[in-house]
Image 1: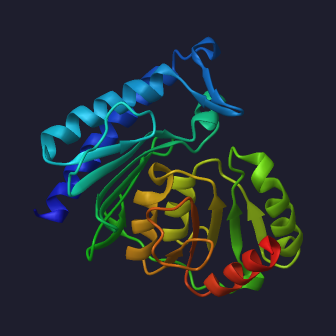
Image 2 (image 1 turned 90 degrees about the horizontal axis):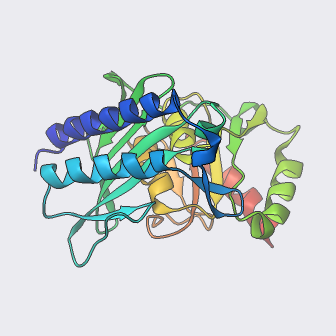
Length: 262
């Protein structure tokens, strides 16, 4: 497989899904929203986007299985898996609040081969392939070199609020006033891409799915950054937590997470 050619083909798929989402947003009604869990929403747009993506990816690589957020396709014993979030940032989408994105990754074992994230509102296509670097609309990406004192961090609020609220409170208490500033953007995939682009210096979140972080994690690594789970392991692709930074502040964030989780 030529990873570069496959990545560019996946970019086309993501853009097509993005065009569908953008068109549906223009006529979207709140009555179309379903509740999956507390504060976790889905609509026909998520499902329609996933159907479009799955169909197109099957044409590109018939031998691959799927891990998808809405569960419209699955896997058996395939060596390669497409990991798909058809609309990352659904709550943002519902409220017409940027960003929201399509996220597609190709995973082989624990190795991420391809990552594509298409942000719909700004028409930004982030993409990377293993060993090939990371790009935004054709331009190479590189992480920042900011230190922790001046870092702009993204601390997301996962849906599992009961389990994560004590940790989040302590993280904010530790970081607020001791770093440049703190943000939450509502899309894990885009938070990772912003780290890869040097717009954010670090990002941390727990209780997220593989479809949320897989493509964006490759973006960060190929842009010169570092990605681990909350324990500091770089074997993160089967877990539910991610710390992604420019590398300079990785240990600062991991040490703080260790302290607040004790």
